[in-house]
Length: 202
Image (cartoon, rainbow, N blue to C red; front, side, top):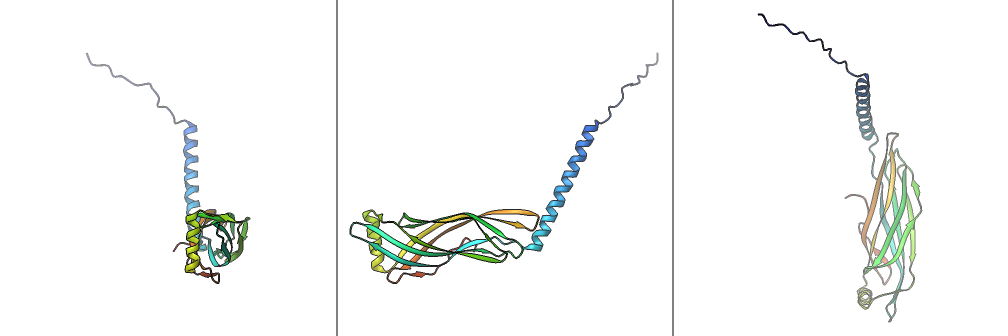
């Protein structure tokens, strides 16, 4: 007896419309991201954005004195410049704070309120930093006394400022400018010994 042929009456399930909608939305989003990336890249090539930076331009040791009890008094003037080399973008600086220390002892804090720097421009901050009488440990006082006799005093300047600028109308870029360097002076006349002190990459 010939075997019976089996016919399937099961119908293939149609794709759910929600799946199609999700696929279309994902495709649109992918295309949009690709177009945005291409536009940002083209904008970068056209604008050539440069990272703003801060630098110590000049300084002067106005006053330094230490008594027999190891009490230190100083006054330092420091000129810090915020530079924006972008020809087509303003830059915003905020949270600017720097500490000035001598032999590991913080002697002053330099701060600035939020400020703007125009296109291809700069802003100078002339910090006049007087300190209250600072009691030093015997070893610290000895180091300062040795520096006075050698006519060479070293301060450490360390801090940062936050920068934000726009690449045209495409994107906003944020960056942290860190400043960490040593400032050297001749205490006999207060002159600053120039050296590189900048957050700009070498």
